[in-house]
Image 1: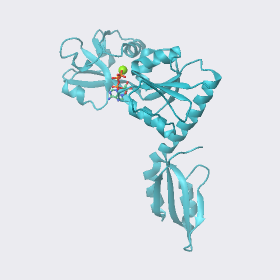
Image 2: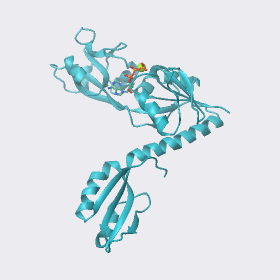
Image 3: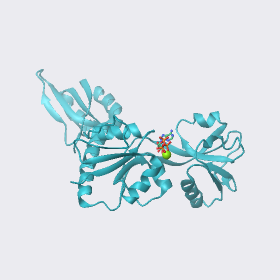
Image 4: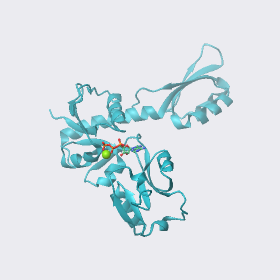
Length: 285
Ligand code: ATP
Ligand code: MG
């Protein structure tokens, strides 16, 4: 029986989260002996540990069937691979920054300027779309020091907190793209591998849904039940059970994590009591 080969980053910002995702999907992987490839003991998958820069190429060629890496790296490498699903972690912005004492107006500031970056493809496309001519100086890393050593007028790089920019006397002036981790795949997977991928995606969906939702239980006075239920959409509709105490019911449902503080305040206003909010381990819709 064939196995699905997944490439993940060997060591770096994506490594742990990628392995956690597989683990949350119930896929057991031993990472003990620092091997560059390993098989799962309970799912037909083989894991290859690679540098993230190499993953698009390996997936295009079919050395790996699927891979997890930052969208920024996928755009930069521009290989023929399919973006299957965004994964919601390793979010970052890619920004243009200039020396902090410069006066910035708009993108035309960059006309004729030299910009240092490790992401020349993304940058070139961006300025082409905006009809601005720039010179791109491609460097491998430590991009932030380029202006102070006279290599470039500006930089284009990944920015998370902006503190690295500040310590190098730079300020962020434009966000060009926002990126997050993504699952990519080879464009010609055979039916057997596609079937394994579908099983994996089903599990990823359940893991992601559960992290975006909470299970909520509360006690509601019966005369306010209708109002309370309209606040709680739930997967179908909430479960309502009578409490031993007359005139009260217990209401159970699932709510979106991002709406939950708003809803809880309104629930309390309608007299809801004993509100419990629980983590969901897995959620299958
Ligand atoms: P490799 O050795 O595998 O080439 P790397 O040094 O290129 O690793 P990391 O620094 O581990 O890569 O970053 C991997 C990805 O994490 C980036 O491509 C990006 O998508 C994402 N990321 C999220 N936040 C940040 C950040 N603050 N700085 C850099 N990358 C970030
Ligand atoms: Mg890299």
